[in-house]
Amino acid sequence: MVFYFTSAVVDPPYTIYMGKDKYENEDLIKYGWPEDIWFHVDKLSSAHVYLRLPKGHTIDDIPAEVLIDCAQLVKNNSIQGCKMNNINVVYTPWANLKKTGDMDVGQIGFYKQKEVKIVAVEKKVNEIVNRLEKTKDERYPDLAAEKESRDREERNEKKAQLQELKRREKEEQKKRQEMEELRFVYVKQGRIVPVLILLPSTKSKNLSSSFVVDLLCKTIFEQF
Image 1 (cartoon, rainbow, N blue to C red):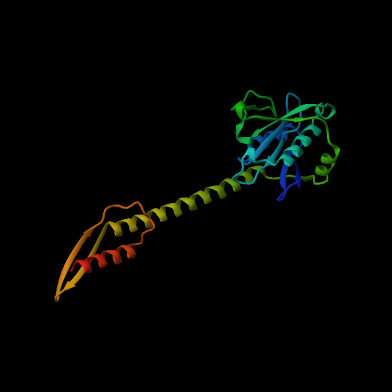
Image 2: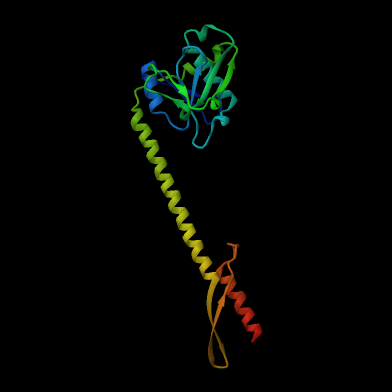
């Protein structure tokens, strides 16, 4: 079972979630998303709380009000921490969580300690905790399927972006070729005179081939 909460202190609201116990925490660690931020009471036992960020956002983009909500929820779900004042809550991106085979169930470490941030919590704020508890939703999600769906969508987006990039590169290459070598036929005194004009490469991608043709034709007519 996974508990979901809604932090509506900002618009659009944020989703916060946590496992029922340490066994649920194992699945959350395994099937987390790159957009997830993990929270835990520092040096004390507590729930593993996750904040799901909008795509493209980072840990530094978390609104202050949402950060407070997460910290209060973690504190409230710590047997020791909920009774203490002046505790610290650590938080870090899901990708920074390190799990090895010799660790106990629910236990984790970090790949990079410098990516772990700390927020101080002076005391429990019942108003915040009660507001979050009212949004609590118990679910039994298929975490593996949700993760695969998310990853598949990302792969499709990257594939589409790559195809669009290749299309633009091909289009610009064609334009450059048209601008580097243009053939004209100039008619003078009843004779057809082929004129081959080689243009140097140009860094300006805003010049259309039709503009170059008009310019060159004007130059040719002025010379004759």
